[in-house]
Length: 349
Image (cartoon, rainbow, N blue to C red; front, side):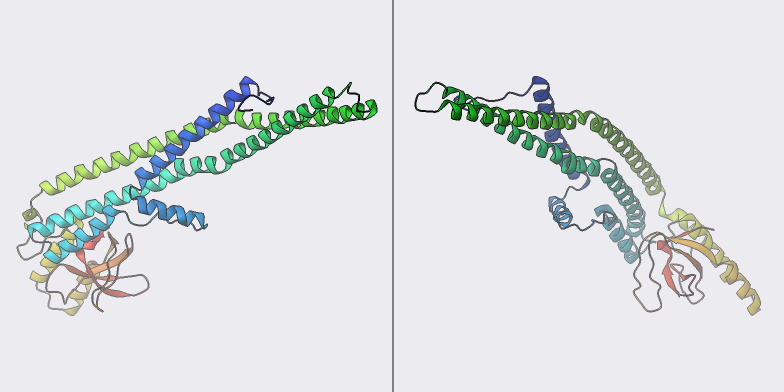
């Protein structure tokens, strides 16, 4: 066929146009998926690792911490180590918490990106396009069989009139070649129609992919708006001097959230007030029990401390034995108690 010495059954122009469009669609879809994965996971080693994990059939957990969350955790820990009352420690705490929030926003955006567009496009390439490629390969085989049948019939007819062959044998061979050609033509036409229907179905697929792309763009807009709000909040937080959090009492340490600062002020009032009876002390401590949300994971450093998990709700109260306001007593609903750092808490009531 390449050098022009054999006949070739040509496909109709409409089918050729559909096939060419499918090839282009597959090519650009593969490139878009690769670029999307590079955006949500810039580390090529991580991408290759995830690809290998998928090949062996293991589900990938996409809720692991992002780099910004690791950075924020270290900044918060460094701020506690340096001291929340110091200028550098206060800045570390403020920036670190916002880095954690940025990392969480990025993690949600990545999860939505995979769910809304990357996984649907991958599924299209792995299922729909592979099915089309398989049927096109079968069609090519049917076409070759049809060309062979045509050549056989042509060869049988060319033997007619030769003196060294019996007319009955030639006629029988021609009839067999005609039946073979007819069967091959039927099989070819049937396979051509099947493949053509699959190629025409790409119009519906493109509509679905357009909706996936719109959803991805909406999540991306929401993600960047969220990041902008976090950056504006960080800018406002950094513009506030550290001394503002210590104006109510020169003896109290700097506290990150305003709710925690209010509790510390109440504690200082309790320390200054004269409480002669044990009942008054117990009532005051009970009044100070409040619910708090853990801002970040915290691993206990001593046996008297309580390990925390991010977004966990616990009950906190004033630590009567503490010499400074950096610690409170945390208690879970199960009764487990221990000291917890104030910097990891957000008071809810």
